[in-house]
Amino acid sequence: MAEENESQEKTEEPSQRKLEQAKEDGKVLTSKEMYVFTTLSMAFLFMIVISLFMKPFVVEWSNLFNFDQRSLDQFTSIKRLQISNLYDSYLFILKITLIVGLPLFLTVCITQTAVGGINFSTKALAFKGSKLDPIKGIKKIFSIKGLVELGKAILKIILLFGISIYLINLMLPSLLNIPNGSLANAIEQMKYAFPKLLGGLLIALLIIAAIDYFWQSYTHKKELMMSRQDQKDEYKQTEGSPEVKAKIRRMQMETAANSTKQREAVKDVSEATAVITNPTHFAVALKYTVGEPGAPKVLAMGRGKIAEEIIKKASDHNLTIFQSPLLARALYYTSEIGIEISEQLYSAVAIALAYIYKLEQGESIIEPVIDIPSDLQFDEFGNKKVGDTNA
Image (cartoon, rainbow, N blue to C red):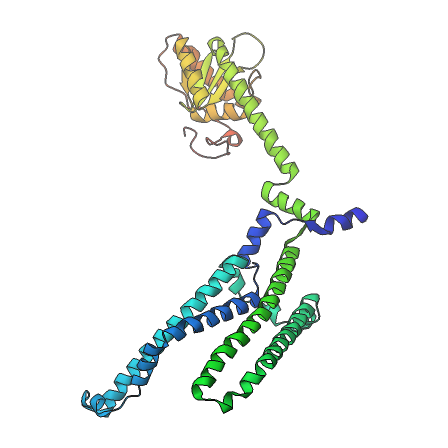
């Protein structure tokens, strides 16, 4: 029982496959508080920069409401003037939206790239009915994650209000004197107070963002941690079970051994009585001595390159080569080198050898039709088939 519990404990680092699967599911490291900090920082920086180039925008905006006689003279009617101003207003709003929105959008993209990388997942966009389950929603609220989110919200309120009150209290004497001074003096005071206040709030947001980032990193890694049983299951899925791998290795070894045996047997072709071919893909060399007990024996057989070597060897020794595709395949897939042929092929081989014997005696006879039992008819891949016996 202890070993079983130990194997279920998630103490192992996530594998590469686990990380890739998490990305496919849309589970990447992210931090909402980091977004808040970076976007507000960019907005603050943007306000400072744009204040230096604000005059052209103010002039353009004021021109939209310029209805003096000169403006009216350019248009034949008030309606056309309104349409023109409406069009100019749309262009102005679009321009401001791009100027403000594009930097903020790039800030969000850069932030996510730095935090957990940008990832697009269709699975994350898919509808999940479980998200509408009120029971799960309540459990999530009272979970550790929910309590941490509540703690962050409380901390955010305390820090923001605390820093705001502290900074305002420091600047209070100068702020109270604003009504007693000129407009220019008031603007100067605000130009000093506002950045200072916003800078203090950004420091508070930075602290919250750092806390949120480390918490999200911790929970994200914890969710991806694996137990030893998870690793075993993943290994079976990717590499196959040990039993299957052992079977594959055994089959590979058997194939290699058969190939070696077939190649070594080519030297015995010279002692064969005849060679049955397909006509070039398969070749089986048979030996049978009339009057001796026993069935014909397979001296050599092979396919592909080995079949070509057998046929060449047979030609070099003036052996008769008989083409019978179905018989050649039946012999290849049911026989072993050095062993007598299958009893089911006695009749077919006997007809073939009798024909070969008469040819060697100089007789001119018609090539016989050799019938192969239906359960011994194979295609070139070793699959059983039922078809034309001459195929």
